[in-house]
Image (cartoon, rainbow, N blue to C red; front, side):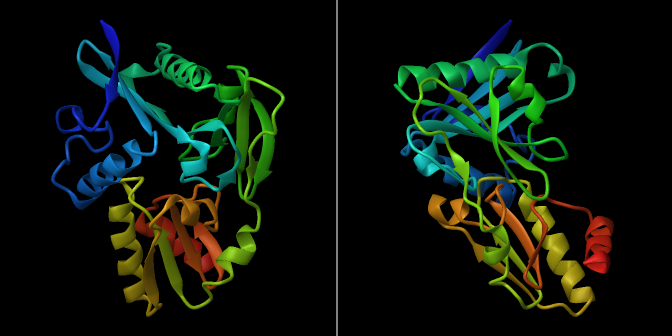
Length: 250
């Protein structure tokens, strides 16, 4: 039996939030849980789809005014994450979760739903949303796209362009701008700092403490940005080997 579970402050201890559910003692997990408890008060919704009680995927979304992505708009619902894993793929679970979000946005009298996507890595593929009636309205380097599903003729969201200028403020060595929205970045941060120390590169970690700081981060992903000498190096976790290659090519 397939069910969709609403995760709230009342049941998050029992249900978790899908990601890293086997590592609930880690810093990344604990900080994400705390972050969610704060975001629930801003209207964030988190839904997990279960098959016979086993979680197969989730969707996380929030009113766009409080989004942690590099976009701006009004009266839209912004999806942070939509993820189906393993045996759950190909069964329509992603479509069902997306339908839940669209229904929530409509019942809240919003003008539509938006999401930052990518055809490359880390984020949900753009084509999935196009197949569900979304349209591509903006793009940003290196391979980000913004898709929206409109309910009316109100202005749709756009990217907060100006990525290079914002990255250029961090000129000396490696700067990691991070938030607690993604629990997977903590291992990546340790890897980056380790490589920086091995290579004698100055490094620092800057906390993004609110949604506005994420909206005006150096990448559309918002919540994780690795800057090297004033330029965006990556917006997603990478292995040690991948990072070394990026530094050599920068």
